[in-house]
Amino acid sequence: MIRINLLGGTPKARRGGGKPRPAPEYAGGGGEGPSTLIFVLLGIALAVAGWYFWNTRIEAETKNLQKQMADAMRENQRLADVKAKYEATKRQADAFQRRVTTISDLKAKQTGPHDLLELVSATVNATDALWLEAMTNDGKALTFTGMALSPNSVADLMANLQKTGKFKSVEIKEASQDNTMKELQAFKFELVCELLPDAQPKPEPAKTGPATPKS
Image (tube, rainbow, N blue to C red; front, top):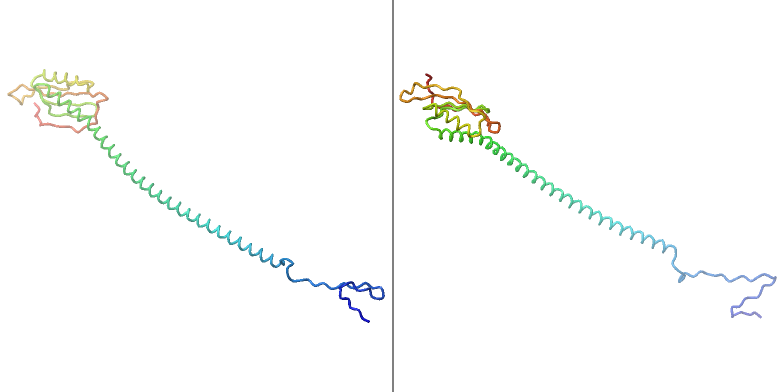
């Protein structure tokens, strides 16, 4: 009679003393955890995502740097334009200042002879009975030639010129009677007035009056 073990118990040992073979096991396909392929795919996805975000950040920083460089170049150009305008304005101001200085120097150089002539004119006008015919200036001395109605008038002129404080010395170089003026007694005279160092103007061209024939 054949017996069937329905309880799944261990079958009896075979005859001959051999051990019973274990029942074969079959690996199940579900519920036992992710496979290696899933981990590989997940790693690749993470790497791609990291590269994308890194590349996006680099591009953003590059664009930001390019914008900053463009802004800096525009600012440099603006500053260069401002500098060029400033230098142009400064050159114009310097040129104007040079012109003003030149004009001032010319006026200063003209002031000495002008003031000296005014002083001489006032001194001559303050002296009676004489007048000047010519004056020359060599930068160191003034030479006067003129006519006087008396020797005393020439002496008064010399004293008045010495009192001005502009001359180191006032000397008479020549004095002679003018016989051409028969109605009056007149004397031709020539004075040499040596200028003080602080009153020496630049030489001026000779100023001549009406010619008087020599006696």
